[in-house]
Length: 180
Image 1: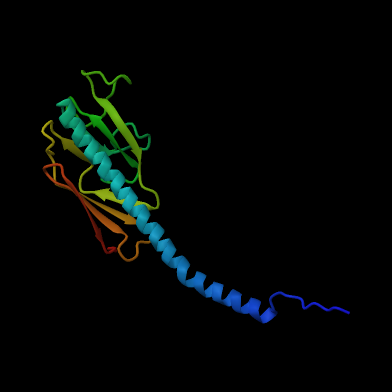
Image 2 (image 1 turned 90 degrees about the horizontal axis):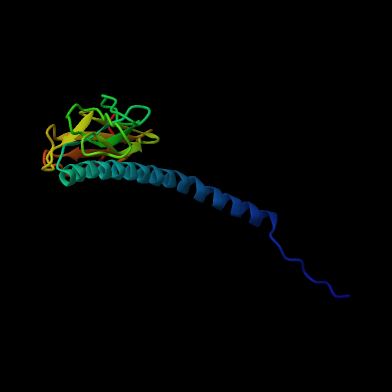
């Protein structure tokens, strides 16, 4: 009679493996969640900076004033609020009335033109010390410097960003520790 030995895991080996995996998950998952949150905040900050640069570039390119402002819920006009969390819009501001009073979708040379509307931040807050940034045809702002604070919900460690738009229209992003 030929008896072969059966192979497999014993109950003790299986329990040890489960304990080791549990320890690894318990230490790794929180770090992974923090990394995801840090990346989300960095992406949101870059999204705002890109829109600010677009507004500045459009002012210089078109040779007219342009504005980026905190948007209303429909993302079709300025909200007048310093809470930029809903989103923001970029538009040419020919009559300097601080509203995106666009007449057609064609962006005629005789009227304001809504250049871009962007949804706001998710799982974060974004506030500025002004409701809009107005760029002159020279690329300078007429109401700078403007500072924004972007903070992740449940902010821990350095999940807050300070975004500054200088009078010259240049932007900087600084990572900083969360403030209460």
